[in-house]
Structures are given as structure tokens and as C-alpha cells.
Image (cartoon, rainbow, N blue to C red; front, side, top):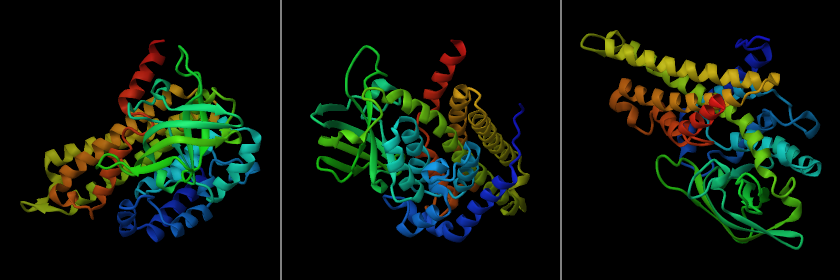
Length: 379
């Protein structure tokens, strides 16, 4: 079986539909305005996204979705990353969808997945805490059983898209032991429930991430996803499948930045010639295309492996390390090409810089994934 990076006809149509959507419904001015909001979207725009079927792209057909492949989801997010379109589509339509599929029982799947596919429910994962680790040892929030309910205590930090969510998927520890990956449970939590407080985290690098405090929050037993204490393996499987889709979004952003910088080098004249004729500028453009292509190739290899059933963990870690670095570095180089004008909030390059920074460590920064990859390779 050979890796083929050519898009199928249906994937080409999906990509074009996403690019047309950006031009029609989310041009530069809209994206700039959305970046300043807590949700990254509007009810009207979210409905249009749902009507396109994108909120259910990974939801199986039997639960009301389109049952798309991981590669199709990657194609969609690569196109949307050229915007870059903000909002909770990845958090809800990809990551949370996969968590429900991996961890939920049949009743929960039938209850939640159709609503996710229609865009009526918006979910996001609340995992990291003040120590900010993507490993199970970083989960210290507690969930104690009280009759037919659980009582949750703890603080979650850097929760992406919490302001847009109708439900949080919270990881909390129901028992402790020598192995930190055991004893973690996943819960649906209503963000408006008594004892839940949500505050946006300030700072350029934080993006639309939030602090979520859980103060004696009571959760019904029916909102425990899967068996108690067995949430981490399911979460790990969901993350492995979701990460390459996020990488595709970053790869799309990196290519968009490269293309706008390349066009600028052809039209910006300095000292009587286009700046693209200067060696240093050419060097920067070459660095950008190398980063952008590396992000795309590693991402689509991981997506291909997921779709064909080939073990993908090594490729997933590699793709995340490469794509996060590529998006960051491509944006940094673009600012050198554009110089002062790109530092304006109105310049499209600045949209990508903000996204590349706040997504750099989301689902694990490059160092985290390089360490994971190194352990797998060495054995």
C-alpha cells in the first residue's frame, strides 16, 4: 500500500467549498473581528458551518454525521487554516467528537453525537491544569462519588473555546495509584452548573483559552463517559486521531503565510527592484516553503496511516512537532519579509501569528512530542 498525496475528486470539492466559504462568509474583516471575541464565532456563522456538514465530518452516519475520513477532515481544516478561521470547530467537531466515540457508551453516543453533528451542542476538552502537562500525571482535579452523582473539585487552565461550549469534557481523578494513567475519568459538565466559573486567560500567547474552576460541582452518574477510572486510554486514542487534523490546520496556515509573503516579494520595490531579487529575502522564502511543505507531508502521512489502519503514533508525534514549529517559524519569517506593516492587527499575517502562538503548545508542544517519539523509537 503506497502513500498517495493526491486529493480525490470529493476531497478537491471539499477543499474548494471551504475556500469559497472563507471568501464569501469569513473574509479578512470578519476574521479580524472574530479574533477579538471570546467564542471566535457568531451564531449566524456557526449555523452556516453546521449547514455545510462540517460539524459532523467525523461523526459516523448512524449518529447523524457524514462519516468522513481523517484525510477528508484534514483537507477541510487545511483549507480553513488559510484564513485562519477561528471558532470551536476543531474542539467540538473533531476532538470532542472523537472523545465521545472512544469513551462514551452507546446511550451517550446516541444522545450527544447527533447534536454535535447538527452544531446544536458544542463541546471542548478541559484537561490541562496549572502545572500544564499533557501527561496523565498532570491531572490532579478530583471527582468523588456521592450516591448516584460525582462531585468535582479542581482548576483547569488553558481550556480552548470554553466560552463557546455548551458542555465541557472534564478529566478528573477518581482514584490514585502508582500509575498516573489509571484512575482518571471523563465527565460531561454543564458550564452553567453551580460551582463552575470560567475566566478568559489574558495574554498574546493564550488565544481564546480559559481558566475553569470547579468548586463542588455535582455531575449525574449518567454524565460519566465510560467506566470510572478508565478515561485516559480512551482519551489517548482520541488525541492520536485528532492531532493530525489540527496539524492540517497549521499546515494550511503556514502555506497561506508563505504565499502572501512570496507575492509581496514580487510587488514590493526597494532600491529600484522587487525585494524578491535580494539574496537574504530569497533565503527567507526558501526557509518558509521548507517549513510549510514539511508540515503538510508529515501531516498527511499521519492521516493516511489513520485511514488505512497502519499504526500511526510515531507519525502523529512527528507531525505535531513539525507542524507546530513550521507554523511558528513561517510566521516569524514572514514578519521579516513584510517588515513593519505586518505587525498591524489589520494585516493578515498577524492573524496567523496569533494562531501559531496560541496553538503552538495545544495538545502538546514540539518538545513534548519529540520526547514521546524518542521513547518510541528507542524502545
